[in-house]
Image 1 (cartoon, rainbow, N blue to C red):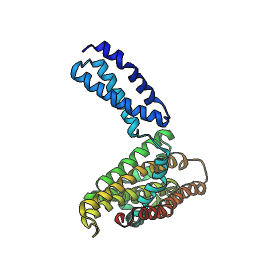
Image 2: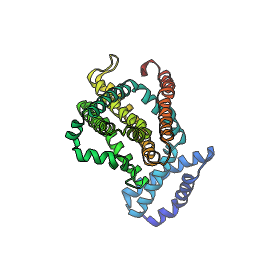
Image 3: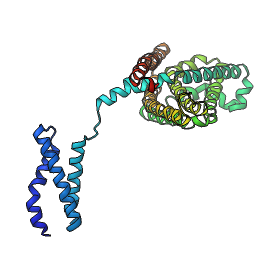
Image 4: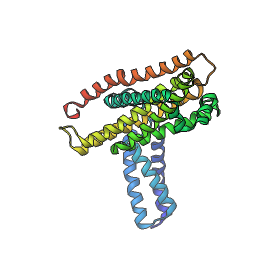
Length: 323
């Protein structure tokens, strides 16, 4: 096979195919031409591979054929419509469907934390047993407030973001095992209970709640959501709905958990910014708490109100089979 003669004979077709593949818009005649040239070039590539496998030319035509195929079949591109659907439909619907679980986790966690704070505040010896008397005094004098200003705000925000995202990922991943989720929640409740109890026992409740509230409302809600979504997946395996098999129930709960996990990345980014920039800001306590509470309330409206409408729309679109 005379390779130079073959290239000279078909080179114009290859160049034309390359031009058509690279154009943003094609009219109907050009689409037909693109399909025809794609088929011819694919045949040329097959011929060259079998008779004259010259690596450079085979590589060029392979790339050309793949590009033309992608143009004909539809090249996946990032779409603002997909982002909009995720933010306004998929994520709020997933959050809303899991709300009994994460609200239940939030209720239990809050009750346990409140009990621990009350108990440690009323029994100072308990705090000493947990962290030591000297450490308790240092925590009250400077440790608790200093934690929020120890590092530069951008560095601190990134650290918080990755830490909370990792904790949420553990809750989601370990949800099917149930017990690890409760262990992670217990550790966080114990930490809050001991610190809060120590601060209150030294009459520094204003410092504790003034610093923990601006970011804690949103941050803890994110942890509760992760734990709730993980436990919901476990329950889908333990007691699947009557109209679903165990495998399908777990698969659907797992897909919803993945959507929630993607959304929590953004939630923890916002809570990290609040903790790094708003919590230690030289503003009145009321202003800082109001800022955090406003963001938290906006998220709850997003998850519960918008989520309710989004869940209804997706259910009605899916029809009876999708319920």
